[in-house]
Length: 231
Image 1 (cartoon, rainbow, N blue to C red):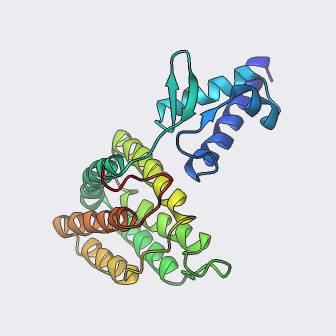
Image 2 (tube, rainbow, N blue to C red):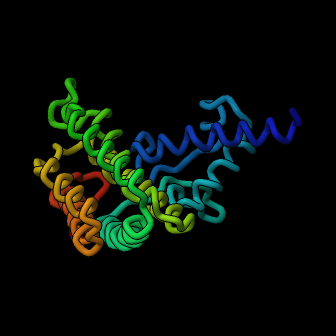
Image 3 (cartoon, rainbow, N blue to C red):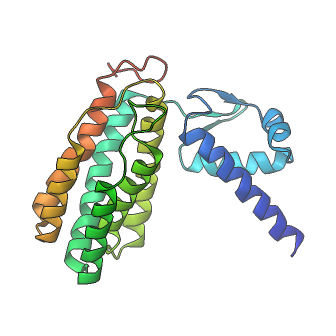
């Protein structure tokens, strides 16, 4: 293995480690990121950390300011609303393509993902107010399976970027607020019915309401440190 290949592998590893910390809120919004400190923490060179942070700034998870270095991207109610609006639009386009092109095998996979979700415990035994990690995994799998028949790599790439930004808000809020007590089982059941009926308009409408309700639940909570609800 060449030295260049090894270096790229190290950068990728550090990038993924920092990305997890950013999305899950281990590194708080607005925090100045000290390259030397991260270098010592991750036991890699400062050049590797700088390259990883540059990649993360392209994803809007990190802000790069000339002469001032890197900091964790700020968060606001206005941004959450904007992310949600754009996410609904992109998700709708992906869903329309998937419903138009999806085979019977795709439909069966969606039904299977739905049943997995319905049979996954929704509560974390240690944090009764929050859904379990297994439930979130099944939930994400259900939504990913719905759009899996979409034939546009760019739409799916944009969808993934918006999902990551939305998750950042949700996961940081999870440590500060109680889970919104919605009837998610009913929401997912209605989605499945519309999908199996190949009713694109209803499916897109339902997914929009689904995403909007999640964002609204965050906006209505006082999270203090990271969200200006008046923005």
